[in-house]
Amino acid sequence: MKIASWNINSVRSRQHLVADFLRDHAPDILCLQETKVEDDKFPRQFFEELGYGHQTIRGQKSYNGTAIIAKNAPEFADHLVFDEQDGARHVAARHDGVTIHNFYVPAGGDIPDPQANDKFAHKLRFLDDMQAYCASGHLAEASILVGDLNIAPSVHDVWSSKQLANVVSHTEVEINKLEAVRQAGGLVDAVRVVHPEPAMLYSWWSYRSPDFRKNNRGRRLDHIWVSPDLVGRIRHVSLLDDYRAREKPSDHIPLVLELT
Amino acid sequence: MKIASWNINSVRSRQHLVADFLRDHAPDILCLQETKVEDDKFPRQFFEELGYGHQTIRGQKSYNGTAIIAKNAPEFADHLVFDEQDGARHVAARHDGVTIHNFYVPAGGDIPDPQANDKFAHKLRFLDDMQAYCASGHLAEASILVGDLNIAPSVHDVWSSKQLANVVSHTEVEINKLEAVRQAGGLVDAVRVVHPEPAMLYSWWSYRSPDFRKNNRGRRLDHIWVSPDLVGRIRHVSLLDDYRAREKPSDHIPLVLELT
DNA sequence: GCGTAAGGTG
DNA sequence: CACCTTACGC
Image (cartoon, rainbow over all chains, first blue to last red; front, side, top):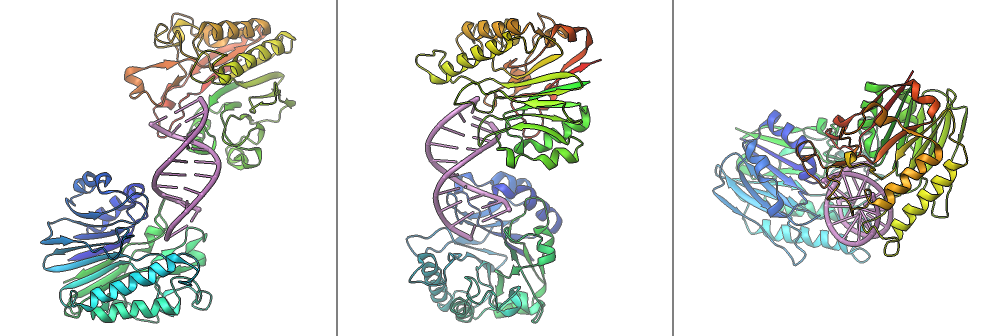
């Protein structure tokens, strides 16, 4: 069983890339974030023609949007709404007995101060809501949580922990809240199981930073967490950074988890 | 000597096409209209790398803009300003003893009434100014006038003379003024020398009209006129309609004049 | 830098 | 339909 997660930065502008990815890696499940499209405009047929006819989607105009694209029908599909703003930031689906939660955590704006910056306040509230949900035991077994969590927790998840210490995505308050979410769900960071620290791992490189291979100013904002019962089934995790070097790339790369 | 004219509809959005064109047809001179870029943002290096290091350009933000791109240095370069509105609608350059005038005549808006429509009034004034300039004898010898003149004069220059009789670009007042410009300059329509009537000739197909090959609702808005002394040197004129069928095309096609 | 959207021009 | 600009989010 192969499960991928990718912040695609507009699913309609990335059809060339996502077609390459599905043909070359053929995951059973593809979780997308930032689809940036309303449900009735989602390119359903495009994915169908690539063999992914089962699509759990939830989007809105312009911003956000999550989707779980699958070869086979889900046993179950749903989504969470944490607040009025919502933003289509979660979908869930059970495939082959495994429940997959696909999250897109708010980016949080520029200023890491919830008093001065409503977007940062929203990010922290969203993490609290995630924690409460995970604490309720929904993810205790046969569960996977993936997505763009917009936080790079470790010093080995950013190109410079010092220079990013006060930059949104790597602040102490965010890192603590992300860890609280993970612990509330009793989940295991599958990426680090396969690639333990001190390996430097990134999943995102800003469009604004040129020459991403040379300067390599990345951050690991995208994550795959699994419930403890699945840890033994982890066969491999890949971070496909070559997709950042393609024509018209997303600023995020796909992560792929293989389970036995 | 090979001279091309092309309304490119944004030179920055058309680099793929113009590179193909220069490689495949290798004109000595390329006259562009609707470059839509200020001079300091013109892609000078792009043309240099294709072997066109000599660039007589005059543009503005967003609208209009003309350019003469050449392999060799001009002996002379200049431009005309007819009014305060201007719009970067003319450049001229002398290459190999031939003076090339590159015009972009105002489109003229929707309503063919100078009372009701300032844009149409501007178009008519521009044609009067062109006529006055041509009447002064500047184009008597060794001269070529090219460009998007935004008028299709003959019944054989439009897909339906009846349906366009009251449509801007094919009204009687415009056609008469265009003919007056040509006669004032003593110029010869080189395209019709090679492809005489009743051949149907188009250089533009609206983006709004689908299936341009099948429905073929075109108009000949782009022209190449030469002074009488050059008529004997006309070897060929091509209207390269395959460029309308390419990826991300301009709505106009290139015209190419070959002189011996 | 690269997505989205709206409003204007051709 | 496809370009431009402005404004916005990431």
